[in-house]
Image 1 (tube, helix red, strand yellow):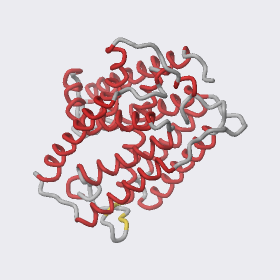
Image 2 (image 1 turned 90 degrees about the horizontal axis):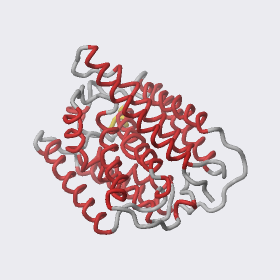
Image 3 (image 1 turned 120 degrees about the horizontal axis):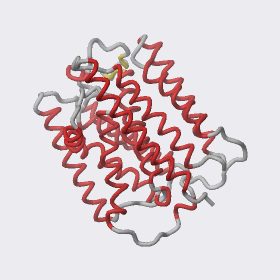
Length: 336
């Protein structure tokens, strides 16, 4: 899962719009995948309405996605670092910005089935929020957009001024949504809970940069990209569908599925044959899973024809984006 050496070589100066394209793509894809692909925000039938909705939450999804990705690439690190930074961002989102980890009044559908003793946190909710952010808000969108620009996948996309500007956007969005989701509803997590989140964030960030840089790769074969994608699809589907079912039994099986996926990806990505197409296949599995599950998500009880048309359009959009990413990945010069 580390960066391909070939993409680290310098390239010719590009027009500004080509340099901005992957940044814009990630700024929009991240909030779309985080809030709207699965469909729990309702049915949006107008493309303009969807674009406006995505832009409104862009500061707390798209901005950190680009910052996480650029910080990882600027440091010359790979996917373990990126995913740990995504974990930190997910903790900030759920623990500080909207405090959904602790606000069971507004973010829980009923009694907590898997409470963690002494923490006032539900294990199932914790996994849902955290894994949702790591995989769908940040990880998969980064992998897909990087696949669309494989020659720039290993380099930062922003200069320091752009990075600073995006950090300001992120901070402003965090303040705004904290006001909207915490201050106005008059819910405030306990100081000890906020401190615990801070400790967890610091641990994730510290681990992200304490990991040794990967140099040599172990010998061995890897499955073809479609097989890696299928494994990711099955194990992610098991996690999503079982995590909130059957109380602790469901959580246990969901964690086991997620752990197995992590072990497989870590094992395969150490090998020389693991490459861009494998990463895209795993990301594609995550996006297609959410797009498929959305057909069964209807919080506003919209008419079935309207629901299917909306979900179908989203699925076709995802398939089109993945097709473009796959074409560009296949056409890219080989690594090494």
